[in-house]
Image 1: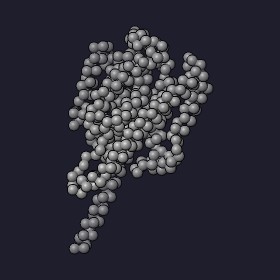
Image 2: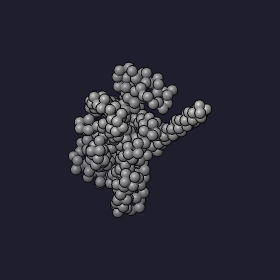
Image 3: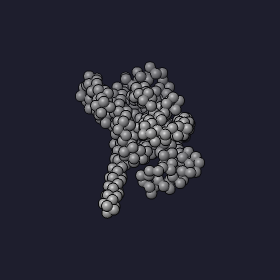
Amino acid sequence: MVLKTFGWSFAVTALGLVAAVFYGGWTAFGVVAILSILEISLSFDNAVVNAGILKKMNAFWQKIFLTIGILIAVFGMRLVFPVVIVAVSAQLGPIEAVDLALTDKDRYQELVTDAHPAIAAFGGMFLLMIFLDFIFEDRDIKWLGWLERPLAKLGKVDMLSVCIALIVLLVTSMTFATHAHLHAGPADKAETVLLSGIGGLITYMVVGGLSGYFEGKLEEEEEREHEAEEEAARTGRKKPPIVLAGQAAFFMFLYLEVLDASFSFDGVIGAFAITNDIVLMALGLGIGAMYVRSLTVYLVRQGTLDDYVYLEHGAHYAIGALAVILLVTIQYEISEIITGMVGVVLIGWSFWSSVRRNRALAAAEGEAGSDDKTEVQSGV
């Protein structure tokens, strides 16, 4: 099962590391290995969230996610995206931007760094909306009940997530305007942050809204087939669950790709702390992206999210932390080690909480079964 799921990731790892050795020797080998580990640690929460969405799709769209989605994730976000940043910010043509990335790496890194406020604001707002919508929703299963119960009550207020996100964006842009120290003037940078953040918010609302609309239509179809499912249950034939297909799956696929793009922002920017060589960045981050995809599929096929019910909670709290970190990095530099460890700790904590919950439920069922057995024996 592990080899089948991670086989392509292992193969890409081997090819990527060999290519690194031929490209820049053993030093390049070490850089690519470090970048791969960095990408996996920063994107583990992405795999958990992706799995929660992917399990709703049919086999066809799961294959699309693993083929076309891989091309978008590896080549689009890890190779093309940094070049596009440079082309837009420096007003260069695509060919000129690629030439700059290969021949003048220091200037290339400088241009990407200058574009960081816009990238961080866009990605930070998109991820913040995912987190806010999650914690303001009333759920049957609660991980941190003392926090999630009052937040679920607050979530009954219409558009609360959007209002809070806009307040955070406004405070971020105003704070940045006061303390900006980059090349352009404070007002220019504040405007960039504000516009980019609004762009991230709009993107989330459009893609998420379309996904929700088609998922709602699917739920209506499920209700109409409810009687048929009950009949199947009475006859003992298990009816396969309805999964997303067609337009619904397409927009959920778009949502997944935008989500992956937002997660990859910190990895792409953080990679410049290790190297400014675009080839090594593409190799290292591409290998990491393959493992994230494989891990997503593994979680779906193993039913891990059903067995460890708090994992999704931990992943969304990690998303919230990453959103805050991205917004803070507009002004202050934060080590990628801290960013990665926050996500790992939150997901690890939620996993351990799930294990404890499962043990407690198993113990309770064991005690109940023992009591029933005692009653039967006493009755005899």
